[in-house]
Amino acid sequence: MTEKRARKPFTGWHMTAILVAFFATVVAVNFTMARLAMSTFGGKVVENSYVASQQYNKLLARAEAQDQLGWTPTVTRDPDRRVRIDIRKDGEPLADLSVGATASHPLGRTPPLALRFVAAGDGGWRSVEPLAEGRQRLDIRISRGTDEARYRIDLK
Image 1 (tube, rainbow, N blue to C red):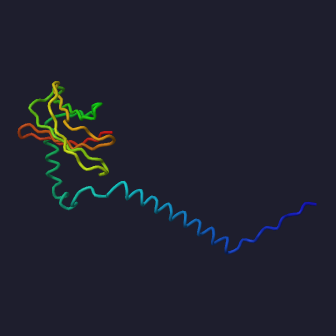
Image 2 (cartoon, rainbow, N blue to C red):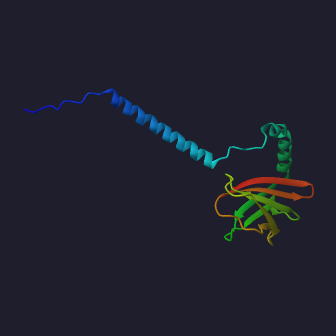
Image 3 (tube, rainbow, N blue to C red):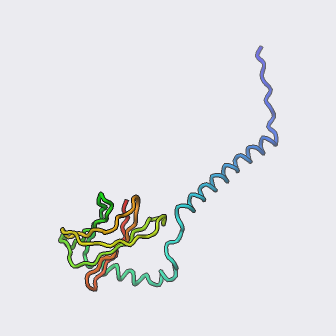
């Protein structure tokens, strides 16, 4: 008739091998994820969180004053990698502005680059320096007289 094969007994060595394989997998995944996390984000949002918290009310007041200006910037990237900013109030372009920006990679992979802007003929502003390829974070400063507005825009 048919012979049944005898099963090998489950021994302590089998259990040891299973446990070692399991924990080796867990440790390898944890180290890989920690390495990826450390390489993509430095973890620093502000220099000093206590000082930042003490200036919070000033930041809120400045944001409220900026909102009352009613300036609306539109930021685009030209085919030649120059940044173009159109600033409008109630749909009309603004004149006599001072525009500047700092471009940086959102994760700090490239050093910050100060951008200078010149007025374009149609009420916009165009950067003199080309912008690097890829994602960039622009910290834009726009002023006219004593009025000032700051915007942070991510370009992809």
